[in-house]
Amino acid sequence: AVDGDAHIMVELRPAAGTDWNIDPPRVLYTGSDRLSADTTNIAEAVLIGDCEGIQWVIGVEDATEFTVTWVRNPLRLVIDVPHVTSD
Image 1 (tube, rainbow, N blue to C red):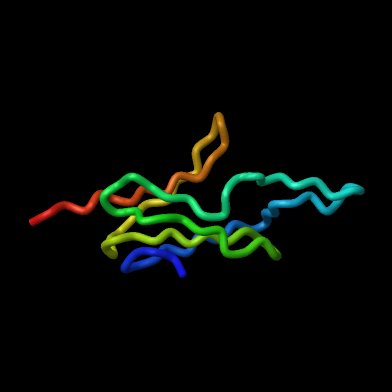
Image 2 (tube, one colour):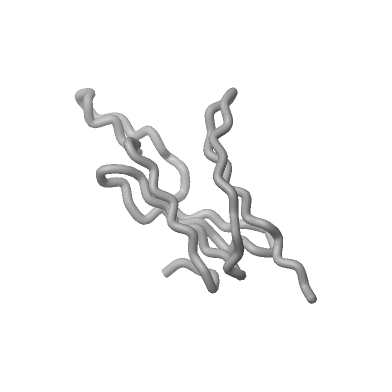
């Protein structure tokens, strides 16, 4: 299970956590499969799959609009989730 009241599914294709084209295969991602966040809206991110692409689920405390941007130098994916504001 992923913490949070709502979830954002992130699927990256083509992508892999392991390079299977070499012998022996080489693991490309060696980080944690569960990341916590010290924010008001993101509860955690969980790596749920690495088969025919990489799948992460981001658990958020409040369903809200978010933006996705590719950034270069260094190449990265940015998922901007607004902070929860108290009323």
